[in-house]
Length: 370
Ligand code: GLU
Image 1 (cartoon, rainbow, N blue to C red):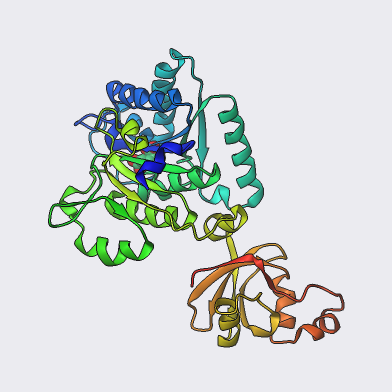
Image 2 (cartoon, rainbow, N blue to C red):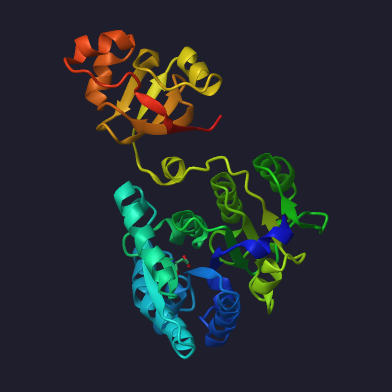
């Protein structure tokens, strides 16, 4: 797999706060410049690059001489608001002298839940790449707090990679891959099952990252990337020439190879980005028809409905026990489904007074976990 990495054209690089800051936690111009040179190396190979950068909070903290990360979320958000401009300024200073325009893109995960906004963000990023600009993404910390609390932009970077259909995501970390308790580096992870069975129980926690998120957040991000079909590489951001090493297929870091379950972009969005407005709980017969026979979901198999949704919304599909096993775009509102749940397709028109579709969720609009 590694030898194929040289063919990757679209690459998302994620830089966490720890690799951008000095030992005292302050964002360092020297480190920004080092990352800048790494990215220039990729751009020089005619790769399209999107950077996901943390560091806003650290910049904001430094402005106020704060040594310790504030505990209060609103203070962290305020620090991020102060620091984001300064962070961009540092990147802009480096890249403007190399004739590259940086472009600030602030995203939130729920901002990508509506398909319309997802496509708008995608169009903007496509346009920026066409203009040879360097998009620099961070979470919009004023309105969202997920990454501050959990992931230091790990998951956000997977969403960014999904957004632009990247063919590689590189997480720059302060560790050079995943290490097991026996001291060995995990070189490649080929399947989702491997993460839970072979990796998590033997993970060497001593080498964990300093900042929020740590290895757990990285593994969660890797799982999502694998499902989306995006290879993810975890490497050390402190090693000179690391991005080139990755592209040249050298034996560095840990590579998560994609299982590529969802090939179609709309299905990927349904599976990972879309907001869920409700749940359809189905009987075992419907579960088997969906999972084993790969059929669409018919109203006859629906037993309970939760939430309030309209035709075209994304809902979860669950067993009566509550166990969610899929998601899909529903073809009726919750009120209409309430009336036709359990009914045969031939009865729908009579009940509703109009002729809708037979399927509550069509196969093509559905993703299943099983
Ligand atoms: N968006 C945050 C930042 O740029 C993520 C990192 C963190 O929580 O420290 O600072």
